[in-house]
Length: 99
Image (cartoon, rainbow, N blue to C red; front, side, top):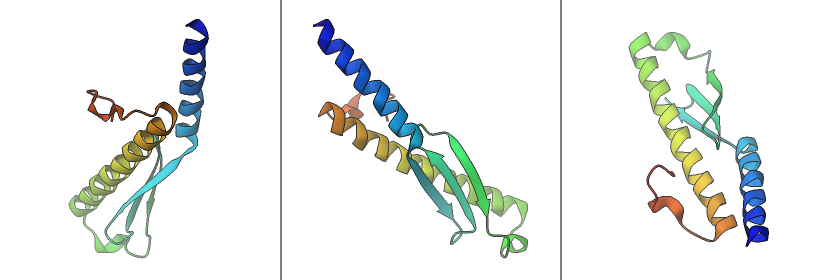
């Protein structure tokens, strides 16, 4: 039983490293704002299309950032869920707070 547990723990640690390296991107405003996030849901970058920046007021730019963040977060969760299912063979999305 301890051997099985150590194997599972090793798989979980490998999964965490994989999720840290995997990136997704959310965008809004036809690419005006892009959020790059890893699959541990850490924001790695925020990019703006400088050619379009002067076309937006601060309030609309704020909405685009929120929209891009939400999109990146959804992609990150979906990718993490897929990777967990590959390793465990189970759909853990029904567990509260997992995804």
